[in-house]
Length: 513
Image (cartoon, rainbow, N blue to C red; front, top):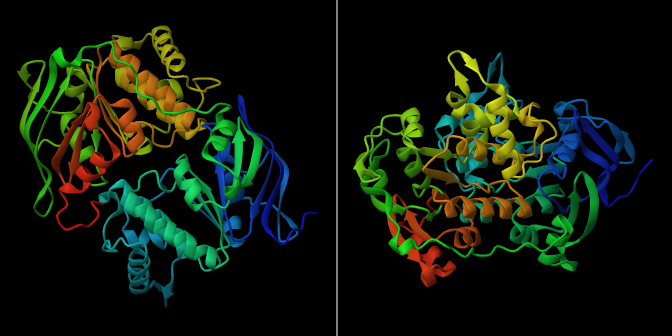
């Protein structure tokens, strides 16, 4: 029996075994009452798995959990909700074909007689979204929202729970702008004042130091250390997470980019917005052979839309795209892959992976024609290619024929990157390639980007992280409200210049989200 008035939930020696891997190995964890309990570790450390145990999504293979002095076992999410436990998932679990208010009140519906009380739902959704400073019309389809807006809807779903005692936040800020993160932190502090305990998982260490009260570190499915945030430093966190103090550093380039040929040139690109205005407004830029070009801007600045135009997702765009010296007529995604373009999308679950396929097929799906002869697939050739990418990208996988969901979020992201590389592109577009990836894995991805560029691959990278984009990019374009507001290179690449340029096109002073 475990009973501590300062602990709202206690996990005792939790094990979780999947085929081919032990995700949790004897992990004990105390969730402190009325605190922000930060849980951190590298990809595959077991953070999300432990939270799934607490939220009733998964059940432990061994070990016990206690709440209020008694042992608890959650056979499903409803059982966990009944004890006041809510979870905001790292991967969005929304219904894109339903409205904002329908998503928010899913499983919390109110009735008026025999019918659903949609007037109550709409008004409740409006109030909670106003509290989150996102006044999205409640009748809006969630599928029409940007990823950052969807993340706020995901957060709103949990805030309407009346008897909430524990709120688990798994990478809640990965899709949010800086302004949205501030709003979220304000809401978190309000929840703490109400006596709600929060579990916060994040790879953004500065956030942890700002909002966290107590830190617990996992590594390779095992408990490593825990401490109060006031007693630790960033270097202590990093050293315990990865066994070394990893820092971002700029790579020395052997390529003379000043005299390199232009591989891609975009001139006067416009993309109309539904209801008037422009998602992209007269954008012109260029990319050289072997260059790592950065695209920086606030959420909604037009970064992802630029990539979508280059990949053939927006045939309504206007402007010129000159590729390898010739004007390119962009028709569709398949033709762009054939032309030598590959995209690593921001939303890996909806756009990057096929959940029903295994790891191997997810990696090879975009390049299957290379492994087929007539109606048959040369599986030996396919396996060799995928094995090479697994080794190159350091993907932690016990068996490449396991389901893709058996991998941690960061390793899933590496599979998406490998899928793009297996098409042997000339231009690689990477939209937030380090989203949901831990520090050690980020460093590996940055090294891979550098090595590929040294081999002559031209890469465009979108990143919301200032230090990341400054570390990996040779040159940076800044977008704001669909307009190009800055081009930085060399010594002009500073945090101050990037931030100033990212707000330059807003005019109203409002967030670009």
